[in-house]
Image (cartoon, rainbow, N blue to C red; front, top):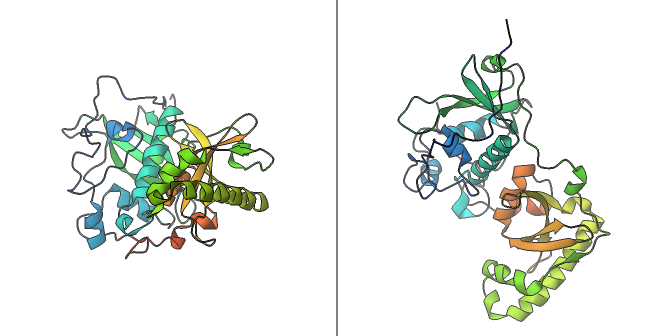
Length: 319
């Protein structure tokens, strides 16, 4: 008998509109459930995800567990909420990670359907506490939505249901050159402090009152960041820029105390130099970095930036 034929999917059929609303929210998100697809709606267009809990419900431990609760429970433990009290219970880091990973898997033709089992699978890039790959498993949609698929569940590589596939997909990749993940301290870094300070001023209370002083402080902070990265190359954290579809590096910006950074500078590698392209809040930086890998740099560790009452831990109802 011929083995099952697995044909990679590259995009949704043109005649299948997204069931995401104009605001980008999932059709059955609870009131207050935030948008989590920031660069597109490929996953929402592709599959029905079921009802999604709001951050408030998750903080109170109310409502049935949704698909993101299930994934957080299946994956090796880490902070999936992000930074600051407003992020507690949101799983915003996980939602952004899944959305961006699926986008990349689709772009790399790593979303694989099987014609015999009528199932479809992609590799989330996450692992279980036993270090097994976790896959998103889709089945044909049967509900009233416009999607062709529904997310059936998250499955580890040892799951019997995955045996229907002759070959399981690898996790999406973001570069073919590992050197892009490294900071080359021999290359100069250029940036325009006046431009970057406009974003920085929104992150520091009272900074709007001293724009020139902020430019001077930013010049010093960038110089300090380069010194830190030269002495410890692990200081530079790779991130994925969704719109430019490129790897950039993040450097810490210390403008108030030497112990804790206030923001991150994203730098893009050119032929002969780096260019400082954007100042990001630490929460934005962590989300963009987590798409590539779990950041190991101490300065971007969530525990240095308390996530509120739950301290980065969310509540999953007992099943």
